[in-house]
Image (tube, rainbow, N blue to C red):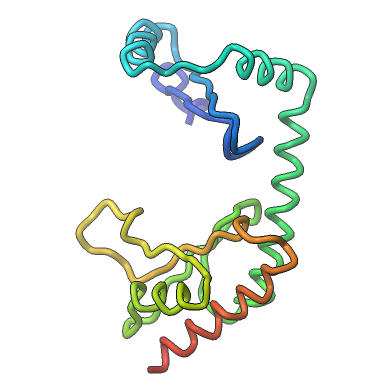
Length: 171
């Protein structure tokens, strides 16, 4: 976006997803004309980060540590996506090769809430589309987090997801 409209793009990002969960710090890059308003909003909402964490992130950006962490996470996500493709390959899932998530649209007769409940009974947690939907018409789909389980357990969990989806579709 910023390359197409740099004069009107505000870029906000954090480090808790791409580097480490405990790093609750982020950055805002914006055109200078927006800076006073954004600074006021930050102060008004009391976005405070310990200076030690800010210093750590700055050092990691400068010495390449953030780039290495991001590369490792992308590599791990690609491995997990590979397992998902192998196990869920016949199902019409949607994903990005570097993502820790898979969206799985369900058949017309399937119910995402019923499938999520079935999987929860097997100790596998998935999300329905409802929390992510911005309209009243919620698609019957589930969101599968690939990074929330140890890699060695991922294949078995996805096999259970596939079996539950196949059962749900042919009820």
